[in-house]
Image (cartoon, rainbow, N blue to C red; front, side, top):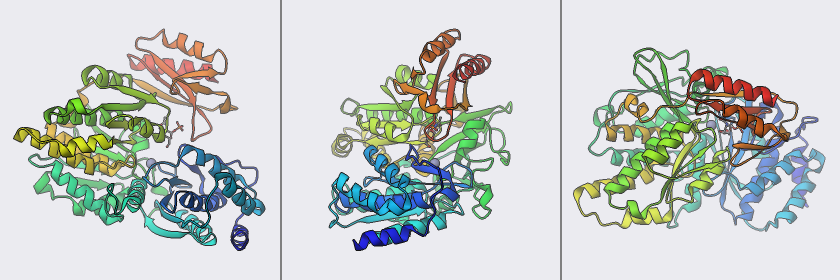
Length: 536
Ligand code: NG1
Ligand code: ZN
């Protein structure tokens, strides 16, 4: 009762936006930052319950809106192993966020009964935020909710989203056989840098890498990471940090960053990179990464999440073979419908690895990746990572090398396990992975691009009256409703050489997305336009 009172009192400080329905989606809650106070308050309450339900394990709360414009913000929960919040709890979050403020303490009580939370359990929550101006206010709200419910908390200040996922996993595995690392930002840098050094044994990176940090939290964090990495003379890795202005709040994600580069299919206008210079872009919270360069004919060349996935899968496949353990490791790749058809072909036909297609949203990919011993998953937009099963870890650790070459491969695999952030897609970790693989293969971005040729593709955003009528199935590659639309799309795509198209309701925006690819640029554009018209 005292707690109920405390919640009710704390809640009264905020005003719930009228007529707004909140929904915990693939990216948690995300919207204009002014509308978020009561949502963050609700998330704070729920984080405590989630921790109690899991016997006091640490739960993470990240305040970020990733690649969205500076005036937006968002909030999402992180489960104990650094994974996305369990699906069932998304509905609890939605319920609590939509409760009228004067009833929020009652809804909280009802949830305790519904979920069967043992309230005598301890509760622990770790939170962090990106560099958005609204972040400090929202963290204040979070603090109020955690204080009202007497939850123990750790305010980790500014962090990239993957850093918080890492810390949460570390805190919960500390002292167990699954210990993941030191649960601090410094521990994160030390782990990555140490693993990178081991992976780089005997090889060197060629040529500088320019990293566009979207003017977000990734900028200062990358600068920090660099302090721990071997010097450019030692490893060849020479990182030039650009777009790392976190002082001017409006510059965040503005004409830069991974989402800009991927959707506009061009380098940031501010880029001073010359022909063939290797470039990379992070997004606003540093969980997405894409590579690119401008070739000798000034053509922009993108190396997106599909490319990173194929590069990683091919490298890990080679290492497993060279280490003599290929038969013991089931390696696979997980993609979404947005993966370029050529990448899927390449993985299946050249790398000879199985591919699973899942719904959009990394939690789906992550889940599917766990079905493999080594699961490589990436969304085309550059969000992804690699997971290793317990069996994989055991095989990698316990295999006795029969030759120096086998030993080197086993050591590299071992180092990759530590270099890769297995909790979640992590742009900084993925960047070191790509740099290390290119160094091992002796490849420039040009050779990387030459592995296969992307089919020209087009992504169109279509505004509709009610996107909820667009119901998809088959990993969102087909529509069951509205009736008749799927047949229309199929008849359209059959008219184009290598034509493939689908439409689905966005999980993060009020729109339907249409994707189309075909053998030529004009065919892909044409197909996208026709399908978009059929959707309207
Ligand atoms: P929606 O809005 O559901 O298409 C977008 C991205 C996803 C994922 C989520 C979460 C595309 C086409 N979609 O989802 O890949 O990253 O945002 O951030 O890029
Ligand atoms: Zn992001």
